[in-house]
Amino acid sequence: MAVFTEVSPAQAQTLLDRLGLGQLASLRGIGAGIENTNYFVDCTRDGHLHRYVLTLFERLTAEQLPFYLRLMQHLARAGVPVPEPHADPAGDILFSVAGKPAAIVDRLHGGHQLAPDLFHCEQVGATLARMHLAGRSFALQQPNLRGLAWWTETAPQVLPYLTPEQARLLQTELAYQQQVAASADHAQLREQAFGPIHADLFRDNVMFEPGERPGRERLTGFFDFYFAGCDTWLFDIAVCLNDWCVDLPSGRLIEPRAAAFVAAYESVRPLSGAEHRLLPALLRAAALRFWLSRLYDLHLPREAALLKPHDPAHFERVLRERIAQPWHALPSDQQAPGRAAPTEGSP
Image 1 (cartoon, rainbow, N blue to C red):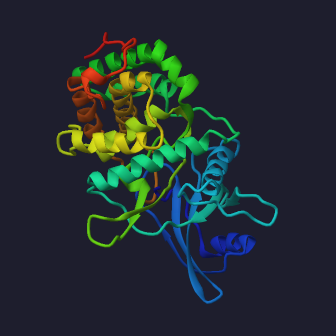
Image 2 (cartoon, rainbow, N blue to C red):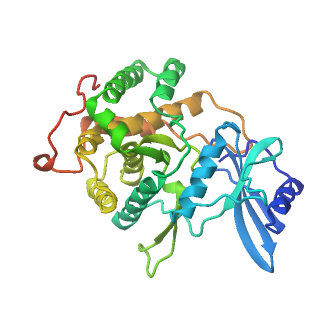
Image 3 (tube, rainbow, N blue to C red):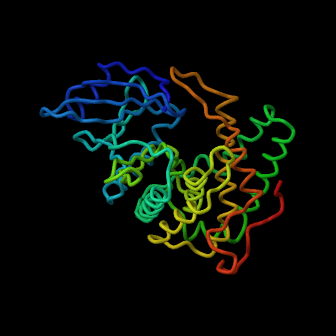
């Protein structure tokens, strides 16, 4: 969400006119993030202030973008709290601004909950399950573009920047995840628990509004679906657990928070035996994915007017913790029988 492409007020107003959204009141670049150009757009219409987010897509192509935008539209119309893209009179939701593909969506109410507790994790878990179930009827298909194929392609590019110890960790974990992806349990997930996922549902991609008292904030929505793709729902859960339920200084999983998240998710969609068995391996996969992407953005950056790459050391710690301390959502005496994930290749 860095500002790679400058947008003038006149350019923004042209799009607002096409969509019938009113008169531009303010246009402010959003400096967080590293993938797309985002602006907060406030405008007036019928005497009221309306708030939107304008996104210019810097990496995604016009051929890829309908998946993300139509997915958001599909989920919003299914009652999942996500920003719905605005359409012009012809029904188009993808436009061009400053020479880049662009879209404008509603701005969610509230703010981020950067210090979540069990209450917040339960809301995210239950809403994520609703999102997965609603996505089953979405017609478009697109793979997770930051999945195993991307990890395999990207690892050699970042290896020259790593210490020998880090390089061993990266290579060994990548080999382990290739084994997991070839396992019978993973094949079962692809057949039975697979579909559109958010794939980046961190604390800063969820909004809450104040509740009746502090600590009881109400979830108002998920946003920033531009890493979404079709993958196992369990990978989406693992991404969330590694952010919503983590001790930031150590990377350690906060188990009561993780258990509450999974229990809330399962209140909407119970996990299969294969999902419970693979959860420790997918927690490692989710940590690897973000360690790799942060290494890539740090060492092979693009220029932007506002760009703050995230520290890759955090997800290196998370990965090492998930290897050293595997976590199951069920106690060992309640875990479903079956073939476990591969254990070879653990650093």
